[in-house]
Image (cartoon, rainbow, N blue to C red):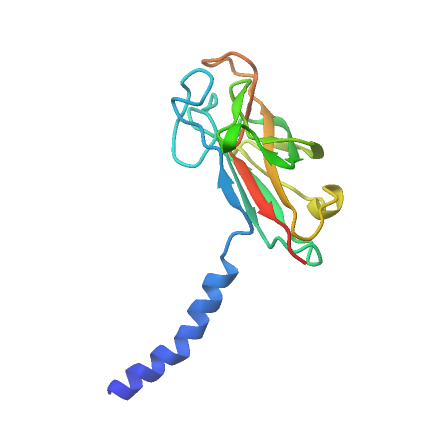
Length: 175
């Protein structure tokens, strides 16, 4: 019986390792909205931007890989208000990765900025990139780039600026 259990563990172990490797995120989230850093004390929760009129902060995450040759990185913003927004890329972290007040949120990605894609979030508050981030961002192997989503928040709430941002997302590009 022990040998059957050991055999079953050996057979399933590589599968679980492969599953964990494929689930590894292509980047690292940073620059989260807190009561101390958000412009109107509108920090809300763990690993998200400053709160918007949905009473939550928006999050930016990635899927796919950071491989330039695979060119399959997709950024997704969640927790948005319905309306237009812009995915953009910077080459540095602002204020030591804590960001600076900008609208109702924090601007976290700085330096040379590249506009990547304008999108319209759906009623469920989610939007994803559909363009080649490696190509539009003109990235090179070994470069670390920072990403954010800047979006309209037309519902007047706390800061009354009409726009907000997600947390930052940092990607180091590979071959």
